[in-house]
Image (cartoon, rainbow, N blue to C red; front, top):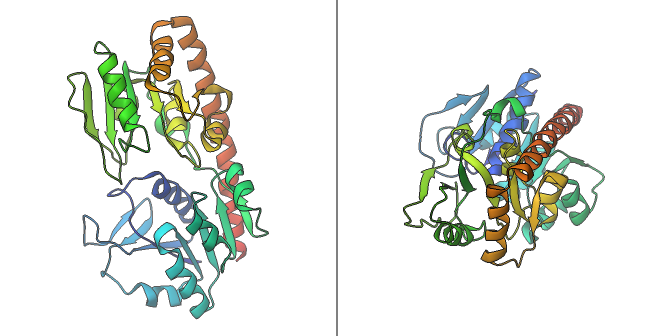
Length: 316
């Protein structure tokens, strides 16, 4: 099959969770012998087409995406380009796959429009948006072998320093615990906070995140909203405990291996929970064991869901 995805940006130049999930799905289609093209709608760091894990990526204006879409067997899209690709699928009479990453109003609208396969990234999101007859759940695939760094490091880490992801809590915790090392990984989108504190190391996000987990003892996820919790699962592959806001998506990802705080918890509650993880070796060991077990279970589940996704795309 000839499969075309029209999206805004793509790895390795844009490594947000939605794009990492989509890349895993497209890689799986390539492994099954299909040709997969990705056509970008925004200007990225390169103007030259490239191939990533067998996926052909065409930067904006490097090729006529509409001509390629007309010749494709199946169209795939998510987020910013959904309305445009719905129109193209209708005009060219092509099957359309929508990959959904949140429960926001635009996503609800798109899900009610033209689609031949809808991909929810969690059971919670499927329930929240309504179980569409063309829908399948496919959790963001996270393979333990790709993220296991062996022994965790010693830092308390937050990935994505936006305010909505907990950037302010991160800065406050670093100020309250001057003898603890903190690692802040700048996210791929949104305004990023940069606390200027001697115990806070700030680094860029990238395609390979093992370097960050090799330095991490506890992962922080003080998000105000998450439809899933991919970064938490990535950390758990190395037995790194996760302290997280109690959102339905994060809880579905981390299960009973996560340590949860209410969405309205203040910095002192976060500080107490972090102190417990850092200074109670027996508790930490239990949480670490549960984290590894959870990551393995999610890995196996997601692998089965990816196979279902590929079979459903092929049936189109």
